[in-house]
Amino acid sequence: MTTQIKVRRLQDTLTIAGTAVIGFSVWSLAKIALFLAFVDEETIRQLIQLLGLRIDSTVLVTYASVLIIALVDMGFRAYVGLSARAEGRGKKKSPFYLVIAAIAAIGNSSSLIGIAMTTSFASSALNMLVTIAIETTAIAALILVIYSSIRLRQINKKAE
Image (tube, rainbow, N blue to C red; front, side, top):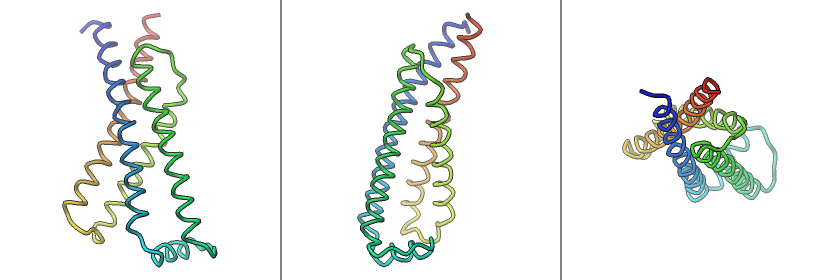
């Protein structure tokens, strides 16, 4: 396979994986929205006590904190996805977005571990399988972004 074909394939992979990362930011937002919709005030109070915090307006603070975290997460994922798409189209991008992608992949992995550890609390096996499949796919998209970008940079460096 020629170098030009490898470069084009990696660029296409970056564009597609970048789009997937943006798409999975919607999944993160949906998870948080579902959490906020279905959690009751007593559960939030128990979570706050487990953390050792003493806050009077626990529900309001929890909702505000979760909303801020969701917006920051969505912003980071959009940044990673848009940067990957731009690099896939041939634009030079800073490697900073790869660091954020790695952190997001670690975050998704810890979320996946947390989901796997709480299988006894799951409402249904199908619900759990769907969640695990989506989390695994989100991790794979981030790993593809990182791998494809690094490989593309290596090939371009050799060509210079």
